[in-house]
Amino acid sequence: MQIRKLNIHEAPPIDLLLLADPSLPLVKEYLNTGECYIVEDYKEIIGVYVLLSKSLDTIELVNIAVSESAQGKGIGKQLIIDAIRRSKVKGYKTIEVGTGNSSIGQLALYQKCGFRITSIDSDFFTRHYKEDIFENGIWCRDMIRLSQQLN
Ligand code: COA
Image 1 (cartoon, protein in one colour):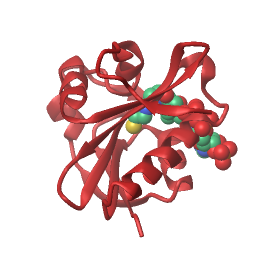
Image 2 (cartoon, helix red, strand yellow):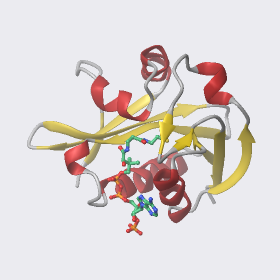
Image 3 (tube, rainbow, N blue to C red):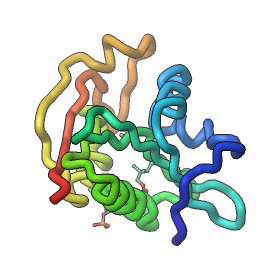
């Protein structure tokens, strides 16, 4: 599986990015300030993530998504492993990620990839999103923050 940086002249996979974050302004901000990486299947982009530098030492993984028809085949895990490897090569000491309190599968996946829960940003989603978000029958209100050291 070849994961590569999105070329500056290529159109970003907006629909895919919106799967991870329903806010178009936030997705655009991440694309403007971060680096977008993709994986393709016969020229169609089926997976994406964005790396966002937060400080000299810390980088954040945002907007990771795999197209619905390709989910559950290990691609998401490969993308996370790739993001961790690239962040290490770039010299960052810590990689962070955030997800909703209702995102059970994502919380499992990040922890399987070595992330540990560090804090909770209470009411993050109720503060930043107009519409209520429900997932797995749970109201998504808080952001669970996770991180791992890159030694
Ligand atoms: N409970 C426990 N483990 C779960 C789980 C759950 N509910 N859901 C997924 N997992 C585990 C899988 O078992 C697998 O672990 P394994 O390798 O030990 O078997 C692991 O997560 C990875 O699965 P994988 O097939 O690599 O994930 P994927 O390709 O489907 O991608 C997402 C995962 C989250 C990127 C994908 O589902 C997606 O795009 N979702 C919509 C966008 C999104 O929510 N992005 C994240 C925003 S925080």
